[in-house]
Image (cartoon, rainbow, N blue to C red; front, side, top):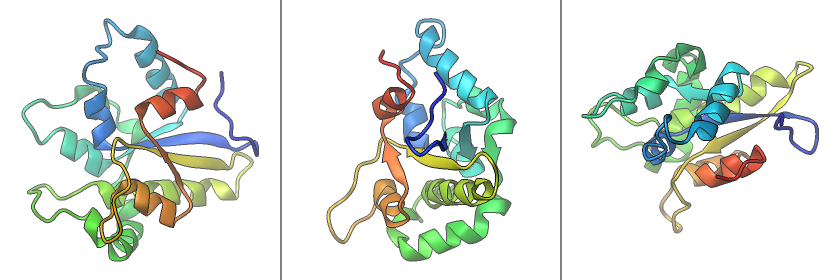
Length: 169
């Protein structure tokens, strides 16, 4: 099934670090359908990962080779920098200065904004959807869903992502 928004836009997913960690129990050898879906989205250009997410995933003890080994899904920090700075200025709580490798959150939101902008003038406009395990915070705090909402971008969790693709596991 090809994921299409009601308005006919292609659905493109920007996947946050938290979602990749949620996928750890879904081993490719056991959950073939999950990984066939993810691989298909990547092959179709409908799955994107900011380089900062790859850095977060690979800075720890258990690197994520699946994401790292697919550079065609990565969006460069350089291309997203200005937009990520804009997002971080608007939502400073998305930046965690305590992380030694930085933080991917503003880059995740920026990637969604950029993808919409890039495709808006084409015959294949998209709805960029952020996939994250983060939830909205109370007033005075911000998380990825809050940043997304501020820019009119939808965010979903792992199971919402599967549902948008017509899958239940």
